Image (cartoon, rainbow, N blue to C red; front, side):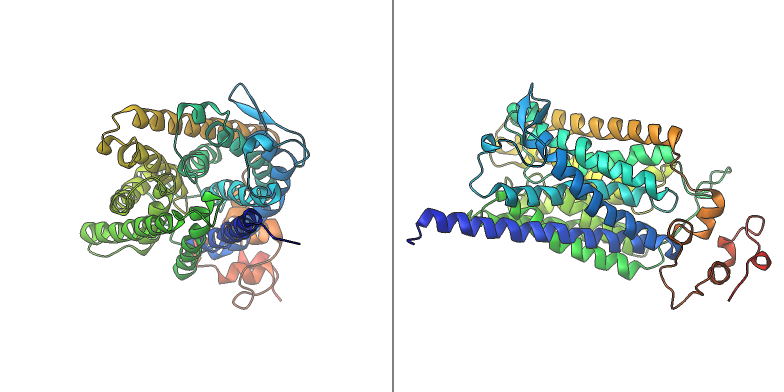
Length: 440
């Protein structure tokens, strides 16, 4: 059988998209390690289970209905639908690659959006209600925002909004959804004291968190260049360079600002600074020059250092900094396209039109993410409940929700042994008395 040039091109593009889908999916391992490292050891297994549920329940939800809402036949620019389980007609998407390859790539994006929320609600949210949210996020919340921006009939797409790989659709949406979830859920026990003191609750394993950040950085080379949907698009090289430069600038600035402010470089801020740079460049990576990507990343790194304490002052308890990284930097990165884009950007003679569209778009997506998540969490709170008890929070969600500890080689396999391994300040003697718990 003679192979045509066009069929070879389609085959290469298909392999490229499948490879990038795998890279984006591998980012879930980065999320899991990052979030587990940033929280107490007694909750690290629970957060990994929540990320795992995004990968299981979320993928099923996006397959059954989410993709149809996002890329289906447009209804008034607001929502789409083309059948359940990829059964409908998606010819309007204009794909040159198989639908299955495109779906797999997009499914990895969908679960990434849901996982942003998992870190913000860590250490005090029940497991079962989180599964419900993960399903709703991938079936309704993310697909509707994606339809507005990435479906050719979506109202923001029609206005000309540019969000190449999802600073708004994935990150702003997920970041402001995380803020809504945190506000409904409330802070961790003793996080904010009545006298105004903010209790520092450092993560149990910052090297693990750093490893997670490196994995996410690596996966971003699928996230951004993969959004070309073509390995033959020569712009993938510049997209990759822009992605890398912005991450480097974000991490550098966060480290330098904390060094100047506190006299010591804060590793957690540097880690989130690099991630903030990645988030911020995701919208404009295909549209800006490398020098602009450095500026975008640098601003994102500074924003991280400013935003984390700001949300603490609002008593919005976010153990991993998801609101700052994804909400703040995602919003900035989307707006930055209107400033730095080579075609239409304010600094390149394009005037204020694109900037206005970008601002309108990120506000609309962010409000949708915040409002819809606030509603979902409020309903769950009034029905099945979303918080574990104080006793369970002190014990740790690994034991209370899953009946096992994360580090069995360091802790006795029984509850009593687990409590004995906790630092004294983490055990409330009124709630749990060691002598009342049997040990092996």
